[in-house]
Image 1 (cartoon, rainbow, N blue to C red):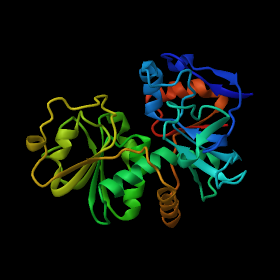
Image 2: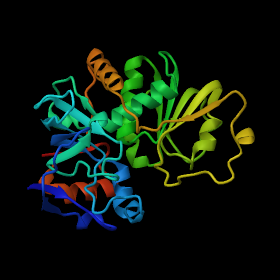
Image 3: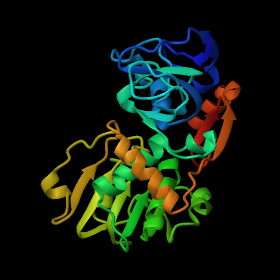
Length: 315
């Protein structure tokens, strides 16, 4: 048996509990991972409070879309027992059981070797956060040294990761928050701005990473120079779609709009992230680390949005 969190209906943070469940078994195409730590994500809050009621969620389910740990049973994969790995997305915590547990059976194609010597809690801040930042900045924004990057909604784990990567690359970073109390968290940006919902006319940048989402997207499109790119990656604004969106009128001439979907990581991308971090001596940030025995408190901190960055849980 193992300790895990399982939910089968809407579950407030204060109602999250650890229970004993059977350790899953590896099978062809799947490996068993002993979880050492995992990062927490906004999407897990959405799962507990809303999405759990959808028919496509396998219930009961162990939440958690990412983890780091060691291969316990490699099954028919090319992994070896004891390999340090990270896993993320691919249906974790929704289509099959995720990371809020001591062990997880995971599809081999979404498990990746972690070629680094970071402590577990530091490594746990990498998978989904740095994958999304990396994909947004390079695959979508095609960010280059010397460019000016706007990060809208920067006081979150993804915002900090994007800031670190962009500054290491040699870019100028303009970061925003809509809360005066969080301005101090942006002191490492080249310029920090209070976001009142209208930035167009105040700034003009080469590239923009919008983590607020549809609530601010139309305004962000008008903050970018002709030839620039906007990447919509987050939904921190709580609005998930744009009703009445008119691409002809709403996207300025010569500005490009894209979005990043993090469901298809590769070992090549993971290796590139670690190589970049090593080259630039980057250390992933996390705001708080909870022991698994305090998962309820960790969920309360996640839902409250006051941690000031990534929350990780150590087993």
